[in-house]
Image: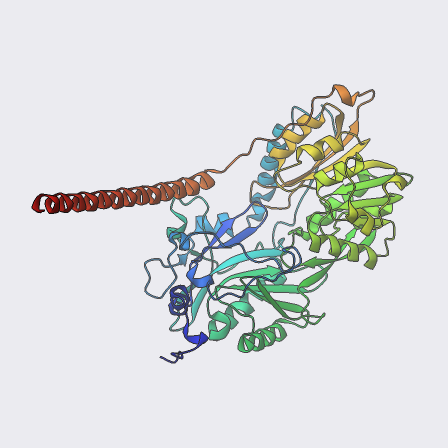
Length: 548
């Protein structure tokens, strides 16, 4: 009723009007990912129609935005009061599976996990090879936690943290949201922040309006970050920024509050005037390393175990001070900076531009002038070292490959493991330090590396207690007398998809087939109508000729 009836302001698309009428609580989903609970939104195009246009800058230069699925909502129902889907408290079994800590059984569960890793690596691990197990604190071990937010009732501001049982056999739009009343797997700081944030959302309609997700990023010896993701634009919303600033002050002087909507990030509070990051100090090898961890970029979720992982890598590479290190997938420099103490020079590569620049700054902040960072993928690093291609990015980073005496390669790849180019490059090094978050792909990569290298030691790091996921570290040394020209080339790994992935895409394929069938039937009806019209015109023409 208050919209103008003339001018540009009056020209509002149907999707924009739909987004304005949309209820404040949009249904969201929380998938239990391998490393942490990943909340991924499912929203309609209608709710995105009023979002600001993308910046003309490079995709990697702007703040990373939450990925929105294609389609018209994906069959997701909103969490409107009175809707067909309601959240409910977890059963004791669900709470034990998703939230609680069973400290009494921690050792038993870790033994079973360790046995599984040994079974996977049995074909490539020599008998008697050192095998170490590094435990996690049994409770309060996570520094990164993500939760979906469920709007139960807008009338009284009822909103809950929720999770979803990944074993529930139901379409994503109809899964039952399970309330998270307590999360003892999160560190003490996270649990305190959860209470304060939820209380603020329940009492403040501006902060609560269409918020769909909350993420917590804390540290062992630094600040904290709280992210609120929205299904509405927040850029230019002075009221939201004012309330978010007040929330940051309420939560603590070192707490940053970040708001996200499509292609927009607004951060307030904290020690560094709203910078979207936290600073962590890790202790390994008798030294302290201070690292900036960016919001939206990867960092290890279990800080205590991360320190043990870095310490293990330092022990494996001790005595390498006369040679140089190549690191692929270096991220924010979590391993780069500490390992630089063991080598003459370090060349680290990372494909993500924000992470590459952050790692460069972290190295400088820790006084490590023997570290060079280059924004290259693993395949590009292999091309550069083989002199198959020249990269301007290496020149810009001040890297002269002829000055390096590379003897060790350190890799910490994503769950998919090493790509063929990275495997081929690793085969040329004297020693390999491989840290993996997926023992299955690790076993496959070790089988390909076994042509040139032998496993010298293995370690299991329990980054994710009470799940079947863990990190594994393997140190490999080159076999004597290996002729690389006679070694079979690295093969690409067969892509494995989960049952959930197959179900989702099967439904999408069925919907696509139905749409194509409707279009085909529509074309046939139109063709039949044109043919009938032509027949009618021909009959009238014949009648006219007979009359003449």
